Length: 197
Image (cartoon, rainbow, N blue to C red; front, top):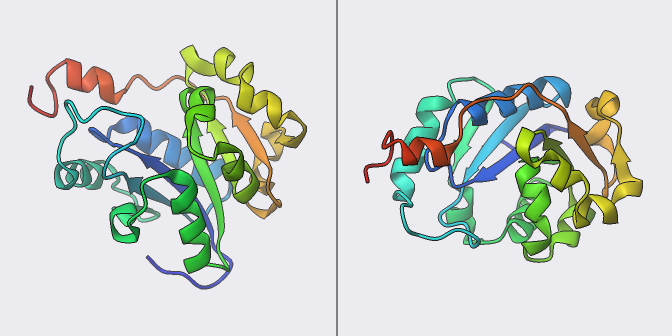
């Protein structure tokens, strides 16, 4: 990973169990709509909110992400393993320390916005980094009516101004409507596509 300059970097964290076209779709939309220089996929050693049952080893999930992320501006990383961080709030803080000139934007689906109040020090995440929330059809209403969206409603940036998000001082977040993408890691696992079992 290269630091330096005034780069605009999207951070897409997750288990990537396995990675799929939906991750790539959100990343490409983020590059375009948020005018990012790159998107980093943060493949988590273990999401604290997810069970280890059915979780493929980190090396396999990294390999699946690298196979999907075939784009020169998408970088697959296991940075949390290197940093020794387990929670998003800590990972973001460490990245901002390591790359002080970089403008980071946290990327997530609306399913994660809906459950964000379960995350460790979730309000600190809003206060530390700009956030772009991408539509996931069945979760959108719950997410936009939920605690996180309500608490930070005054800091919501209209989707048509999303290109300015990386340059805004947090808290700042936006909701970006998208055409539905059919891929979901859970469905892939249940279909027996990957990983085995």
